[in-house]
Length: 176
Image (tube, rainbow, N blue to C red; front, side, top):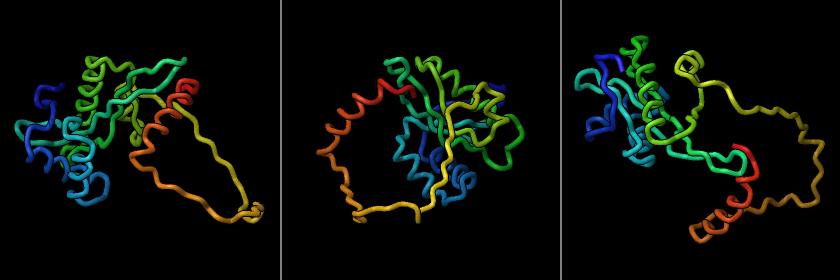
């Protein structure tokens, strides 16, 4: 990482509050909502970048996996990348992402994924477009249904075993 920046986990409540303010500003919601997001994600997954002792950016690492060739591949997802507005265009995000990728490699993740909202930044650190996007057009008035009732059931904790079983049969047969 560039000499002036340091990367690591959030060490205090002040770190979480500072990153919450940064992410709230970056994503257009209240800082309190960002702090709730960080808490729900798990503070152990929060990473910050500092200039001296001051938090100037951060992100969330998301341990996950995808299936390829019938095998689960370890992946580190990246979410909530944000840099304080007055620190942008100084290499903070590039340094932050570089460190996150080094951490992913060290942890044994074979891939890293994210929603690339900034193509220049993410391509610059090694990400590339992947996946597919499909667009279909359907006129609702062309649909004919005899039964217009929508039957929904909320999933409960008791359903988790069934969902895991269905996922366990489906996922290994479908890449990604």
